[in-house]
Image (cartoon, rainbow, N blue to C red; front, side, top):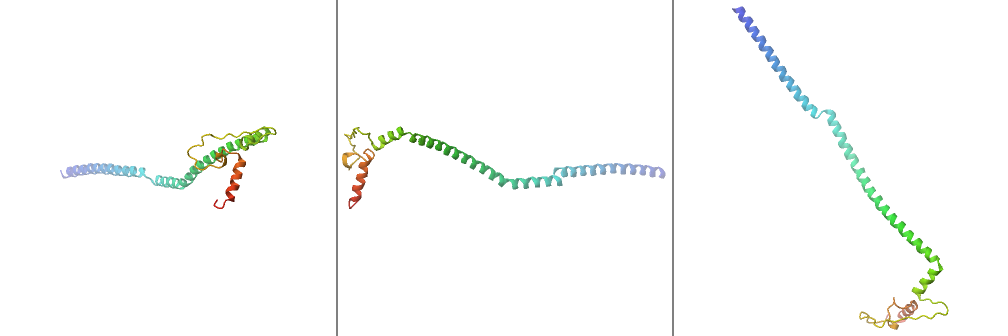
Length: 164
């Protein structure tokens, strides 16, 4: 029986060792797979990639901000250029009108009260001068209502006065 027992105990020990080895191997395999799972989450390459991406974001943030602000400045300058172009066109039209003698004569007659030879000019005064004016110059009219030469003479008179 001793031989049987040795065999049985050897068999059982071998079986136990095999089972123990299988369990240990399964445990080691699970442990390695856990490490691999942990490693696969953040490997050295992935960490380097994240570092490079963060560096690129930081390096490109300022130039992108400058690019966006310069684009808005360019848009503002284009609007200003368009406004200046429109004003230039209006001024060119006005210059072309002033080249016409009939327009120049019309403006002189309206603003400066010029008359052609033989014409008689009449200047009408307002019968109700208004309540706001306390002191009115000669003729009872304000500076914008009177002919230009009246304004000139009033300016000379004011300059000649000791208090004015």
